[in-house]
Every structure is written in structure tokens, then in C-alpha cells.
Image (cartoon, rainbow, N blue to C red; front, side):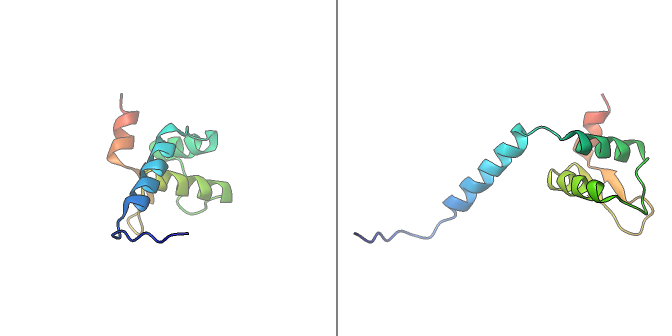
Length: 89
């Protein structure tokens, strides 16, 4: 049994972040998430009443930086610039 002393680094946290980013890039969109994303794109998602399954999908889209969630300006959910660019082919 031995003891190793090494300087404190962020290598483990950086590696975990890179793995999470890789997973997000390789993981496809769930069908329900795609429906919610399209509803935001077309402006047909309700700004007052959100179903429970939509709340989960909104969180997933927010984590992927595909949408902005705004408060108080009338438009509650909007696409990020990257997501809007992907829709405008």
C-alpha cells in the first residue's frame, strides 16, 4: 500500500465533461423531444399549460442548448440561433 501525492487538477472533471458532450452528440433526439422542438419552432406550444411529459422534453432541449426559456415577454419558449439555423434550410 502506498501514498501518492500529486497536484490538484481538474483533469477528472474535464474528462467527465468531454464524455458527457460526446454522449449528447451521439445520442439521438427522442420522438417526443422532436415534437416539442417542432411545436416551439411553429409557435404552437402552449405558453400557459405544459403537460408533464412536455416539461421533461423542455428540460432536455434546454440542456442541449436548443431552446431559450423566457419569462414575462409573451413568448415563453424560443429556439436558440443554432437550432433556428438548422430549421431554416
